[in-house]
Image (cartoon, rainbow, N blue to C red; front, side, top):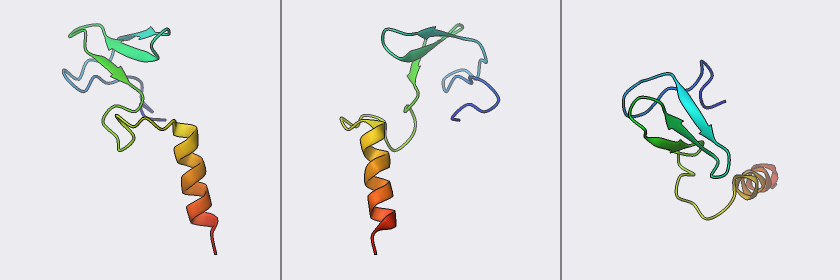
Length: 64
């Protein structure tokens, strides 16, 4: 969902990448910058998993 038109590098705007499955990263083929799915969003650098964040948002939103 982050890259709806495909991968776009944040550093050089290149649209071709390689997936590093062992580290869950995408690596730009041109500038070799490694970008995670959470890179550039508010969840970047968080030690809480995305699933835990989504549950927390759900519970806060569904509370009366």
